[in-house]
Image (cartoon, rainbow, N blue to C red; front, side, top):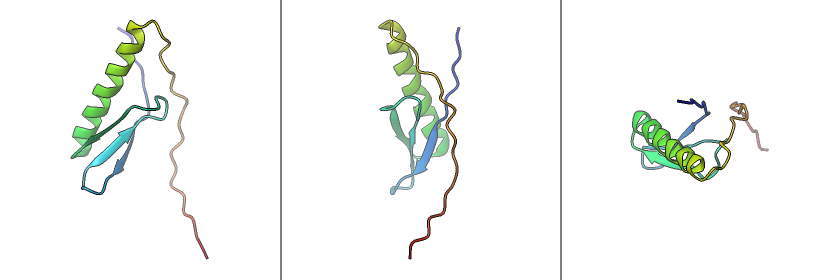
Length: 76
């Protein structure tokens, strides 16, 4: 068994749930009603994507070391 570690970003949505995406794997986006559900959905989506790549003999994306930082922007 091989393990991979990826950064997953959760953002609140307008319905009170969350949207999750993984910067290292563009196109893998999922949603959930709670943080726990969203993380579970993200794990399932990423796992399915990686299994598909492996089955097709394609390379597994590497984590690029995402840096997540809040930034305040002041407009005049």
